[in-house]
Length: 101
Picture 1 (spheres, rainbow, N blue to C red):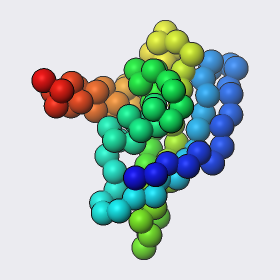
Picture 2 (tube, rainbow, N blue to C red; picture 1 turned 90 degrees about the horizontal axis):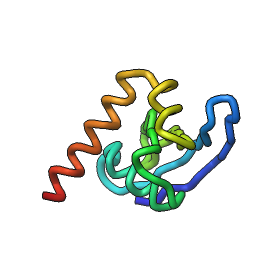
Picture 3 (cartoon, helix red, strand yellow; picture 1 turned 180 degrees about the vertical axis):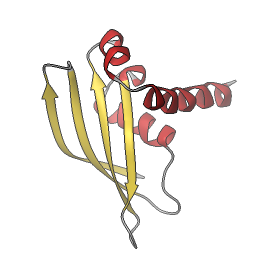
């Protein structure tokens, strides 16, 4: 799996960086957990402040487009993000913790 950042934009009002990216992969679409961990490593960022909002597969290709947000602090993350997005990202973090045990 290879991730290529298409655009990076800082949003000062919401205190976050917004990323659009492409994921080139073999086989099925990568999971949110896999993309989040790889993106956090590429950006050298805290995975707890990184939210992967969506990953959309391009039809007929081994490629997906995605959108992620990296917050400056946890306070803004909890204030701004919708509950279902937080749950989706939290579930992925719990899965990673269970696999590590």
